Length: 277
Image (cartoon, rainbow, N blue to C red; front, side, top):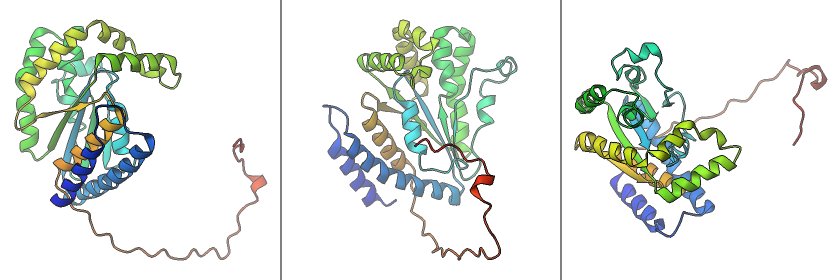
């Protein structure tokens, strides 16, 4: 993607930014469609050039990480762009080197890995909830920058996003989750604990940034109060971080279907689903 096109897209995105509210659905859909076309170009560039990309999504509960990941991946090939959201470690995994189970998911050439939460669990929920010891936490803060330097030196493109959300907006989203049956599954016991430990989570995040927000591996903060704006701004920023060029696609001519000698079986001989709609 040329610098001129990037600049024009940034200017266009900036034109819609406002502190007065979110973008309307129609404008959001229009902007998202354009950005998703560029994401497809980026995907194909990564595939053909053999790049390895890791994008970390971290942040407050109900800050919009999941929706942003869905917006990024909606038009992409799941064989190339993979989303990993690990459950809590098993008894065996607890005895491993802390980063070991994440290393197993790192991308091969031509792949993009999106981590829906990551090794930074140790600096966040594990620290606040007491799921790790003080020595394990301190060791993480010491070794995480070294681990990320190793990844970058190996050729991996590492990008880290932190989704920030205000107290008021998080409160509203939590209440929406409780009242909406399609979102109720998103609300967990951990959400209740996190509400009662807001200050502790804030202090843990500040400490994490102090150790791991570096020039070689910076944290990029996403304002998550307005979901649609956050998704557009994130995708626009992501596209700006990886130089790529749209590939010229070879023309494809569909061959005619030769159905000579084939007769479809009667519909009544097969079990169709009810046409309710």
